[in-house]
Image (cartoon, protein in one colour):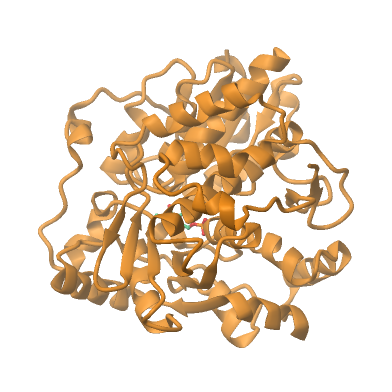
Length: 462
Ligand SMILES: *Cc1c(COP(=O)(O)O)cnc(C)c1O
């Protein structure tokens, strides 16, 4: 298997290269040139297996023999041993046919742990083999930096620098990052806002000369290995509910589309999925595109579900590539036009998307209403991201007979502000984190100046 770019011009890469590369040189995203299949028998044989074993079987074709099976099994087992629930991603039945897939039992209480616990270890494996080191840089508004840090803290060949806006991150979210005291973890509080931090990370990727040849690696959701890791829980949860003998539907709180694209890949591999429901918050480009063919940028809105606050949905490009039947030139033309003006999809690709995907947008007032309503009906307190999914699933599911699985993307304690706004006294942190507010912190405050940040990275990397 090779990996090819959605814009059709960058060279094809191996799995190892694609994990180390991130975005393709033509501006596209990498996808496998052929989609491996899971037969009816393959799926049937997964019933009753551990999550790690299912993960190994689903991902092994994508790894393409570039990590030997025994080593890869070890990496997968180690990654998912960091989760606090024995099932890794347990299913929680809400009513007769609506299930929550709890993806928040990892170290930072959100679904990004599923992919980042694996990606850090895969990167470290390849770097060790090559005798190289790498630097990871990222910017966070608070909610997602910790998952990258937790994914890399044990990686001998990686140093990770995460920039957050100084004094503009909630205490719980800051502490999830700054209490990781590993030698290779560097938290930088920028005296500026999130956009300043992000601009400095972008500039550092564009001109990496300050690192004197050391590789800078991106672990954001355009990295193929993150998609690969996320395919697994679609397969595991569907099998738990009776696949391949019966179909299920999924409802996915979505932003950059990495999560739901992984579900689409599972379907393409052979998983019987009736329907994908895309839930968005008020930043609704995905919903507008599917419902009205309005593929245009709109002003960013700060919502109660901040991990879904986006203007552009980066991984949607991977789905467009499939909808346009892998015509890289057409995808490139569409996305270049989209950068500067409101656009629309061609009729046939849009019709293809509508065969598999429904969508629904949920505003902040509705998020609060859903948190109350879901608690009243099921006793569960949903986090605000999951709340968008709960409502979208109830509104858009095609039929009541097919089980619908809503992906619970974060633990409510991580987004307690919304829960309190909905009228609840708050949500306690899970037991393994209940001393978070007493733990020692370490971070460095720097001015919002590129040269200061780059000097800090260059001096502190090991
Ligand atoms: C990142 C994130 C999302 C959105 O996932 P995408 O893969 O970007 O669509 C939803 N909920 C939470 C809690 C997240 O952290």
